[in-house]
Amino acid sequence: MRVAVLADIHGNLPALDAVLLDVGETGADVIVLNGDVADGPMPAQTLERLADLATRAVWVRGNSDRWLVDAFDGDFMIPGLPTSPSADWFEWCAARLNRAHRDLLAGLPLSVTLDVDGLGPVAFCHATARDDNEYILVDSPLDHFGAAFAAIGQQTVVVGHTHMPFDRLAAGRRVVNAGSVGLQYGHAGASWALLGPDVVLRRTLYDTDAATTALWRAAHDLPGADGFVGNVRACAGDAEAVAAFTQTVRQQQARKR
Image (cartoon, rainbow, N blue to C red):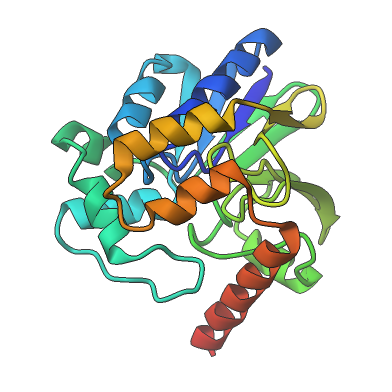
């Protein structure tokens, strides 16, 4: 089995459509939707497009998927982290979903495992095996990697969450970040990964001028739309993104003490 991994679409339907065309040309058997699929400028439209994949899609829960459900239910608490959108962001997105969308997101698992050609059993989770909102970076300490994935036995794990692709050996395990389809940092194009028989980090270039026009038309009143659309047009640099995520990691670790 060959697997395409799409993470962090964040309601960017133009980017998703471009990636799906590329995925179709690879002959991938399964598409893993590795969390944070819908919150963004086109939430309902994105979920409908993904639903069209039917049994080809394997869904995994991301933190934003969980927060969308909370916002839909009127029970959303602001995470209070520098990389987390505002409550208004999620309330706007949730207001555009219907009950079927909400129930789909509410039923997603924290992780799934698939047997991939050439790699064997591979675990897929949005952030880490223990928490859908735990930030782990390519340069995180080895003990952080070890603790974050201690609950699973698979020697290869694929994540998303930080929107920055990497492939590294850490604490005896191969950890792959597929990057972000909808909100990339540090590079042009939509990032995703193709697994089987090895791991290939892919990048799909798409018409970001046309995408920003479509996204703005759909969500000009979305709180935070300026920043999102601006990043699609000209993405944040990798140093800026790493600095923000490093600050978030420190805050998360401080809260656990």
